[in-house]
Length: 486
Image (cartoon, rainbow, N blue to C red; front, side, top):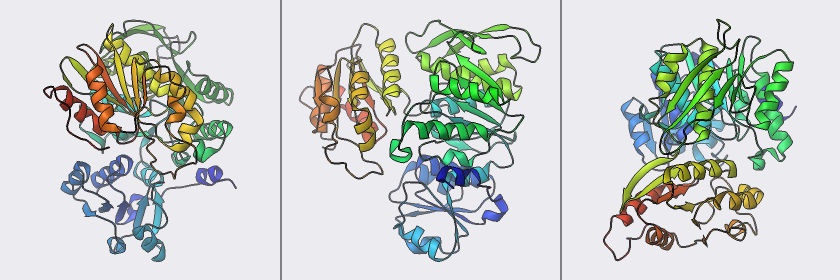
């Protein structure tokens, strides 16, 4: 039995069976989300992390027992321990849990337990998961559906990344990076797109596609797949699912999409399009058109909103109410998030860490900047991803006017011989290039920016920390910036 086949056989324990639950690395986005939900469900929760954070403090105020630092005694009196893929077997708390014979769950298994009694909307895809999951959550709450939700980033407007609702509907971001999304049992599955990524886990593009195929197979007979018609990978999934008798709702700009976007105004910080729902999508069977208005830029966000509307249709939510709620969506944390400005230069931050995501972020920046310039501080994420996509990253980054590329953020990986940021910058046409000195890179970007320009920090690592430093440098009198971290 393969690893992917093994997780398909998983059946989550009930909340009552979990007992007291301890999260190792509770400050992480995914872990803190599940901890918050379980606290809302009345589950006793404890957890640890290497350093203090605002998220941990919030969980403590909600009733969690929080430990700073990790030690074996923290799992004393615990029944279930939750870990993420990032937690190594040598972790003292995990070692103690295994020695004591405690139930150990991957975070996806814990989330599956938290949402086992609800109608589950699981949002998967190589890109766009966090924003789409956030949009669906805001849309449902605005339309009067008090859904539970777990998102990989803070939902602006809600101020949190997770919450327990009373409607019996659960909206969850489904992480494909380690195939753990196969632990979920979705009633509605959203696939925003499907490309090769996370090859450090899967090995081949074919294995990635196969995992998504298994994800769609998890839908029950009366389930619905909401898939992007503009993306070849998700469109192929929809075709296969439709052939097997599953209900599919396609969305996008592509002709023939069930929920079709007709190009509108995607300039500036807002975007507008016409949504055409083909005959048969709505219960009355008629073809109808609606206007979609968003407070966030870019065609990729129009697509994300169309996916959200597909979920509304599948759940029977009134379309007009759903569209009105989507018009209030102001973004997700680290998704083209405004960090501040100085001297007329605006600073934004984006989590993009795959070439397709970088392209989308830069196209959005271009639409906002208009005739002005876009300057980028990019931090590659993972050695394996850099090795696989160096040329594609360079091509995407060439959409900017100037690009500074920091050293690779290793995350969970050990270095790979010969893999450095220079694999990208050697193929880059935009000026600047490799920037091993982060302080010098910040100063050079600030010095090169003029009123009306945008500086965009991009990456899934700690590059986000440079946003405030850039804003401070822009607002500092001539003479340089204070050091950040080099």
